[in-house]
Image (cartoon, rainbow, N blue to C red; front, side, top):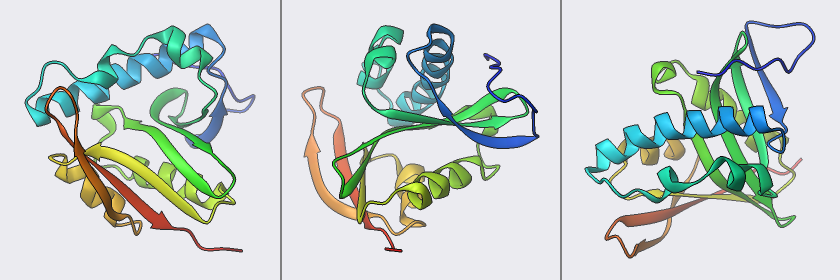
Length: 165
């Protein structure tokens, strides 16, 4: 697990915007994604899982915004999202498996939803990933679409209306 120096005064738990253009930051995101998405691939019983094929260079050059949840100086969770001004699209959301079931994912998702000025949010996950579907349901996400990938994985798009200020 990579440790990043991003804050002048370390705090036990904190959320920071990540600069994925920095090679060490994109490597830390990639490492977390590899661990979390490998866990999801095992849950789904698949070997060829598209999120595992993403490179550090792709992470570095994506226009998405990344936020990281830190336990002291260890990156524990990452969100990746973009917006068109009205809808927040969560393109990636992962928690290091050793930090599962500690509320870290909930804190990070609440943060990105609260910080968004959008009226709605969407996220996609595998239909068989019940833990993720239940997680997002706690934040008001419901299924709005379903399809199958070329690899035969059923995916769902979940959507939620966000409160306006």
